[in-house]
Length: 193
Image 1 (spheres, rainbow, N blue to C red):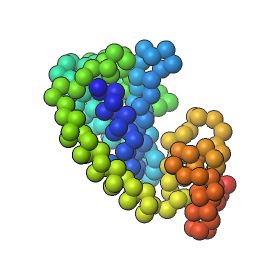
Image 2: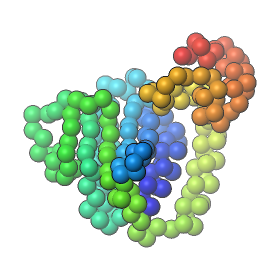
Image 3: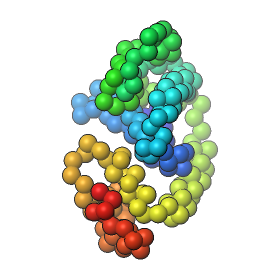
Image 4: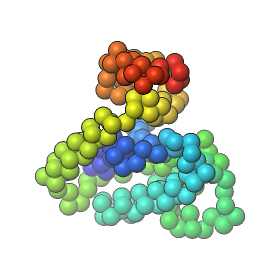
């Protein structure tokens, strides 16, 4: 389904690019699904508006192709202010567009995310997942633990209290292993926090 594709894509965001965090969420009632996009690296913030506009318009087009259906988001949220002319936004998204929001977000009816991907190829998905998993493992092993912690914290904003244990779990490590890795780099969880 489209939802499965989003969940997989978001789980491998570090392979695609480490400056952006994509998260796929479903409302507690199950009526909506949304994708949030945040800059994991504050140095890209100046250009992030352009990335978000490109990413959201591309996402909508890819969804329409994959599902062979004119999927329309329920709403599109942009952090940046509204432009003088919104006609192109309305043409592309065909939905309610909100500017000056707290987060960059695409919101869909959950039933749209349950649509099957037409012409999907499970055998190819298996091969690609294996390859991207290997790439992700290599990248994670090369990246400093302090960078991985910083990104995990950025992805977790709004989730409440941050603890070494919670962040370690998100990174697939024990708290002690993470603590040791940070110490080897001359850093600590507290220093990063």
